[in-house]
Length: 149
Image (cartoon, rainbow, N blue to C red; front, side, top):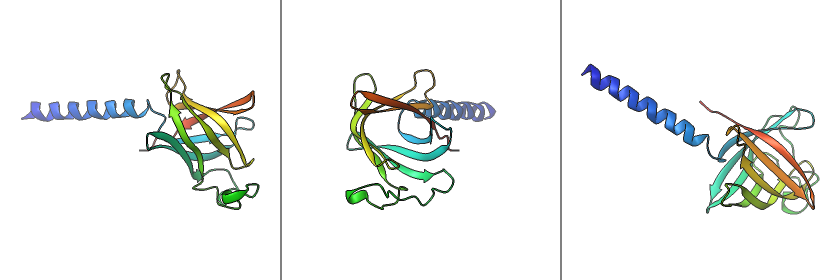
């Protein structure tokens, strides 16, 4: 009986570790954005799959004084809408190298849309590289996985 309980504990631990490893190997989940220019924590972004494509939305604003931010510079349907809950990535497709590419990476602060690609950092799967393109210029940010317990 004691051996059976010990065996069950080991099985449970192995399953837990496998789940953790699997979760840390995907772009899906919650990510903390940090301004690469001044180190300010900006937001928590949730990346999710819908109809086989990658999407992302703002689920929490971390920056002081911006919790109720609205997209004042936006035009059209986003004009004066809350940034919290706003979709910032739409319809990104995964290629054979595991990189997601799309035409819609939206920056609510600048009210600009960029082409972009997103991939996991090869050295640390808890870091996400997000590169936005404007013509031939680009900028890459590193987002950090939010580990929820």
